[in-house]
Length: 460
Ligand SMILES: NC(=O)c1ccc[n+]([C@@H]2O[C@H](COP(=O)([O-])OP(=O)(O)OC[C@H]3O[C@@H](n4cnc5c(N)ncnc54)[C@H](O)[C@@H]3O)[C@@H](O)[C@H]2O)c1
Image 1 (cartoon, rainbow, N blue to C red):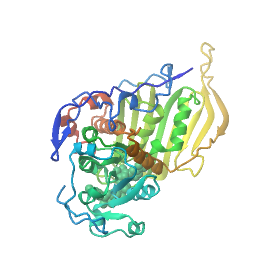
Image 2: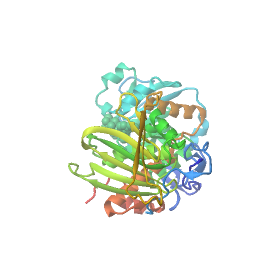
Image 3: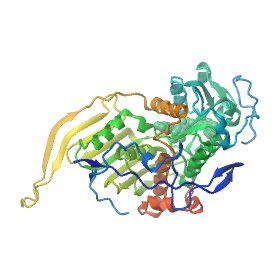
Image 4: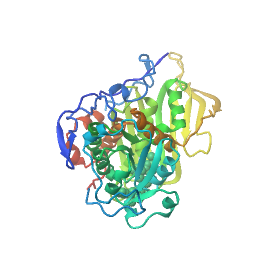
């Protein structure tokens, strides 16, 4: 029987009103009730939500069908002699200036803003990406002292983004989540293509403003959903899509470890974006309702242990997500349970990250009179070979390729917004102890959303 995937939520109204941000004219955020962004490079269209168009349009849902209804003045930031840029004189172009830029550049100069734990990995990955002519490191911490290992790699270093702008065509933003919005807007307003690490922003209003700004500037906006570039996740999606597991009952995700505690956001915004994007990707859908529980055992301002339940009403599947900074053993696991088989994706495994268990529970025949007669099928476990390429490198290749070809990334701004909406809904659910529908988040006005303060506000 063919499998049915929905075409995603209605995401299609064009932005019309304009407002002023940081001195630049930008389209307004969409009106209440519409997380819409019509066709365009950075926004996406309803059909561009997920690359599932190859799937049959009709058939049966994959799941059970029973979800619960529920610039400051630049400092002298250039530490390693660059190409004669004068700090403080970085030309910041208005959004319309992109028309004058080569629409399909042969090579791209990429800056990484924030070269901490994760940003350094981007720098290394970019060194090998075809079409990248220069890699530049930008980080506040470099204002005081250049980084020896970056210098050894021959990477130019800047302590201030404004100073680096003339030297780059595109930016990967790997600063703490609370800074994504401000740094992202600054980069987009200067006409730079941006890949923003997860989460795209700390609330849906900011995410929408980034999407609108990128569309107005006609630059690529990509969300750093690394796992969507992971071959093991692609395999999991294939197993679900091909119905190798039978009818999908549920997804269960666990992302646990001891630390690392972040200061600006809690464990939900830090770790759950990975699992939300994985679930959205493998199901080819978007959640409709979010329920969250959380605790602050050691964390003062934010939850350090949390549980999320995502209902995907369109496909009739429920995903549970457990995230923790307070657990003795590192766990990065996604379990998909179907009526015929079960699959486990373990990202901590050295090899064979996907295991398919030919196991199932078979209920007694209706009318057999044997109510207790559940039987269990125990077959072989299969470890499919997955050609593994470093997901971060694949993601960065995709970003550069999109810039060079004008193609829209699958993990676009709307994809990032979808994840941020779940984070917003989780915050309300935590506070009000109730299921929160994504429609509620979509229709929330900016002032109402601000009342919740996204993910960074300290709660009483
Ligand atoms: N995709 C993934 O798998 C993955 C994994 C880890 C982290 N991340 C994301 O990467 C980002 C960075 O995480 P991290 O663990 O590397 O953090 P980190 O604290 O190690 O590094 C952040 C760096 O940003 C710099 N910085 C802060 N504000 C800045 C600003 N305004 N301008 C320039 N530099 C600034 C800091 O000095 C620091 O060096 C986060 O958004 C995180 O969610 C993604």
